[in-house]
Length: 619
Image (cartoon, rainbow, N blue to C red; front, side):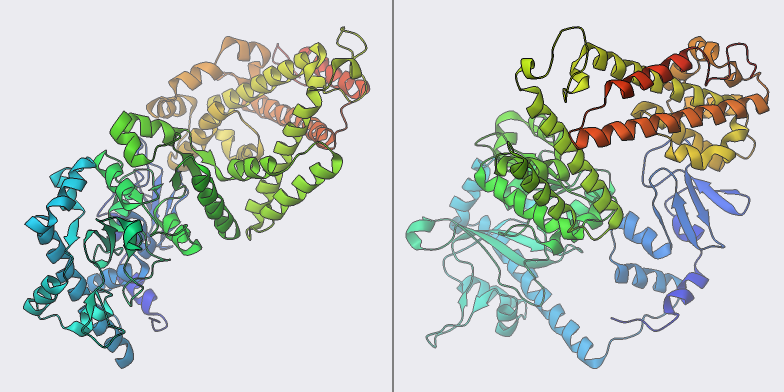
């Protein structure tokens, strides 16, 4: 429904961000802002700010940012209009009424909710009746407890639909509502309407607000002999759109907000078994491959849903369809990963046979989307000739070019380029050694990959060690001279740190944002409180200080600043050399002996202090 102009602004004017956030986060005023612990991540020191004047919150730990409406959507899993209605009520503002046509539509939908709720209660009763004895036994054999059966409101639809008709009459639900909700169908032979679900175990399907909107049914007899599908779902209705709905959506959304990983399974029983084993953030599409609309719904709950699929050919095909449908809608921070079950297993059977730990291990080995696509395309055809390699490059780049976001597209093209270089280098390394080397003294000849020679291995090892030492020097300088952080923060964002050391850089950034008076002692105390003692011990060492005394706490700030300038220039030079090397390798043109000699020369200069300021602390 369209809202009048300025309606949302009126709500924002009456309710401050700190009022809404303060119900979930303990806030402390700091200047013109409030600070507190992030509601989006477990942390010990505050990284979350609220600015009432500007009307937004920002989390430095996760990057989450928004206003009062987005805060409710993110922390309570509400849809936009649900958040609007809640905040409008709090502000004492009435949400505009719908048009007469919209009101009539909503009234009809409300009557259909009555019909589905009546049917759900009836099916639950029938499961515990004599008619449902076989259905209940089947569920127990599948390992479901009474508590789980009740939690998911599982039921049984008898062969005769008269019981549901009688239950509807008792609840004052008319046949028109039963037909509209897909519970009954009109006879094509002029007879009375008949029940859609008969002799089936019933799985209620709920919407985002946990209201029953449809059902799935598993046939209890011999499905093939009867000529019917083992599983069927309700037809599409005003309440239910199969391509947009996810089984267990409401429960999984809450579990995601509580910190669980979102798992997309293939069927009802998988989701239920996962929940019983403690994996409560599980959903399933409804009998078809996941749709783009369902992927969008998944991303509203979790940035990286895990697609849990059987390891057979059908599972691979389902993964391929999901991947292809995700590519045209990828956006920064949103993706899919793929979890393939061991052969012959699905989540339900794996948990029953091997326990929750075995399933968790499969989740921990999830394959990223770009890796899955690469593996699929690489296995599709040989890549021995230049033409075959060009065909692979065309296919993967066409996949990347489907991505609308230019930044994500750029990184996918880069990732595919890197994988091509690694794959083709591997092919080249399998060739006969006699075609590549003339001797065993480490001299590089022709197009031999230099990383395989003794010289190449030593170069790479020394380059890695040198890069690590540069990173340690820069971080030590920043920790001991934190007043310089504002001057170098933007530059450090482009500086490539190793994964563990980058945590220190991020920690420094957070501290600089929240602590007004910075000194080395305060910075170290905050980093230790954040669990970074071991990283500090890696950086603040005698080895680092012997190479760069200007990094010490007692060094002059001007000397420390000169040291940072020098280190960043060195880093830029190294990145240029590295990029040239990557370009050459990607084009199958290996560095020449002259180029490698130049790298050795740079290494020698660094060893002798030509780029560092010097061991005695003087220029």
